[in-house]
Amino acid sequence: MMQRCLQLARRALGRTAPNPLVGSVIVQAGEVVGEGFHPGAGQPHAEVFALRAAGDRARGATVYVNLEPCNHYGRTPPCSEALIAAGVAKVVVGMVDPNPLVAGGGIARLRNAGIEVVVGVEEEDCRQLNEGFVHRILYQRPFGILKYAMTLDGKIATSSGHSAWISSQSARNLVHQLRVACDAVIVGGNTVRKDNPRLTSRQAEAHNPLRVVMSRTLDLPTEAYLWQTAEFPTLVITQKGANPKFQQLLWQKNVEVIELPSLTPTHAMAHLYERGFSAVLWECGGTLAAQAIAEGMVQKILAFIAPKIIGGSNAPSPIGDLGLTNMTQALALERVRWQTIDSDCLVEGYLPQK
Ligand SMILES: Nc1nc(O)c(N)c(N[C@@H]2O[C@H](COP(=O)(O)O)[C@@H](O)[C@H]2O)n1
Ligand SMILES: [Zn+2]
Image (cartoon, rainbow, N blue to C red; front, side):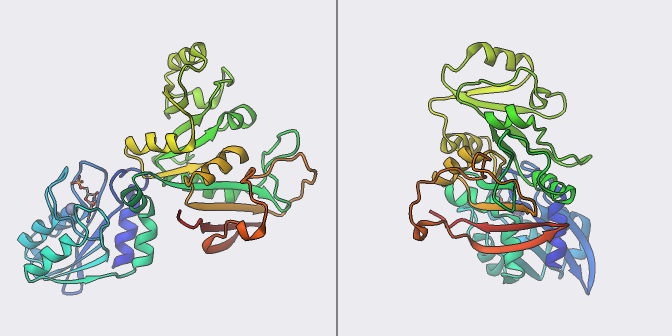
């Protein structure tokens, strides 16, 4: 039932920030009598949709939900009260809500009302689905995911900058799927100049992240896929006073431009946090990737490794200089997993939290 909650929650992938992904199932005498998911901030919570679907059959039933029911008046009233009013007998919770406005209060409220509450079912999967939301709440900044594709000898392009394609079509499809789950995708000016990326999800009906370009100088091409904003918006983040003429050209193309006093990954992520974003994908080159890692703006890494060799010392690598001189300083990923995708290998893991 908890896995079904996660499945339902995923229907809103990429659309709920700053809120979490939540699904709920109501079971009465072994039969599913109601299901629901949270479609987005400002809309009713998953439990409310499930209660509406169950109607009177919620009385005496068991409610499954991947996140603790809320207990506060936010954009919507507390689900704890709705569950109590509906007369449910038992609530099975995937994980405690880290939001300080909830943080165990929903569970306590239900228990005080005589409802049996079980906590921590399929907890690891529940945590992973909402890792962006959890990070946002705990650290007041979005969760950063760095993704790159490299050859067996650690290159992301030839020395002339050619990179299409390093990884297989199946690996690229997985990246499109990853974009569905993210609120924004960031590249630097170099990537726009060299690759002219689209940065979309390539899936009908699916969510597309806000496409973000970080560029200090705005020394960017006048024509690029990213400036075609009829379907998908683009945000360019630059530094105060940079290239006013080019800024004007971008605005004419409906590309939003914002100037920050100082253009760093930290400041860019702070801005995206203010916009309500939870999960941000870094698809940038090595220099920006190294800066983002050094500033603690990357929490998770997904490295696609293709069994191809480019060779040469001038071919760029996925992560630039981190200033490390000794192997004991190497950043050792935690909770590492790997899988094969066609002939490529995907290694993923988490950077130690600073
Ligand atoms: N249990 C649960 N189910 C949902 O469907 C939810 N969206 C949440 N969200 C929690 O409540 C906060 C948002 O409240 P409003 O939508 O503003 O009323 C969010 O931060 C989570 O803590 N929980
Ligand atoms: Zn709620």
